[in-house]
Image (cartoon, rainbow, N blue to C red):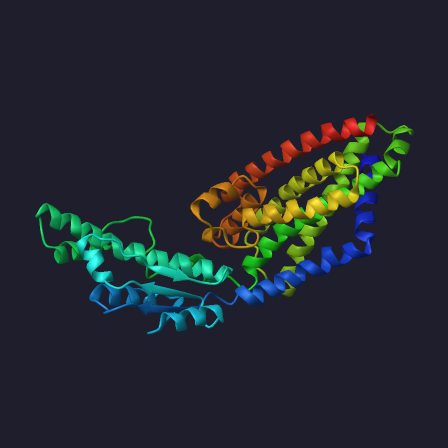
Length: 387
């Protein structure tokens, strides 16, 4: 055990003594948390341009009113669609909506009304698009039901539509009406709370993969062979290297957690649950780092690919934008990444006041990722060290 801890300590200290690593481990994460909090942590308040082509009927007016009534949306009217497009391109508005000519007639007669939405390719635009889509769906539902009832001769379109619109108020369902914020559970978050958990997951995994270069150097410089020439088994070396990678991951994770708590007063929810996520996710990063360190013989290759893999999985797993704004297909794909389960665990603790018991499924999935990665990496590294 002493040898394992000694090897682990040496590897951790060697990684942290690299001057470039000091910046990327200790300075850069805090800068990103700060910038993310300044840019997106002050709440979501968007401006949306609206242009109604042709004469504005009651349904078009109802649509604009419903959009303007959203807690997070301010509507700006435009008579000229080109002016609205220019406002979107210049950043004066977060998006623009155009209702086509004959909007009311199309809905009432059973035709198709194509609502156009334009925006810039940024995170705010994705949020606006989801809110606009919600208003469209909410308005189309009672009109569609009214047309069906009118077609059967059971009542008039106006009466049936009014009745259908009132149904959600009389039944108990878990749903969200168009007047509520899409991100209602984000309202009570502190300015840096959301970004802190996302960046913790991103940097823990990214720095872990960067640590694989140290493992490759250990092999290239013959350090592993010299250790094997002493009364030290390959199993001890494997456990020591694992401890070294784990030490790097935990250093990064605990530093971000404690640092953001002290500097930005970030709320991490139940401390036992938050620490448990860091401990288990650290094992995931450790397994990934060891696997990369055993597969590559060049630390530059491992470093470059590590950044690509780390950022790619972070983007898919919700570490760069809230997973709630992803399309349903992407949300399903995200579940195949460990990042998703770690971030969802933090969301349960921070946004929903969950406890350790509530995140047990997340910890179980992360433990499964870690077990697979560590098993494959140990098998591969054993072959590399002893050949």
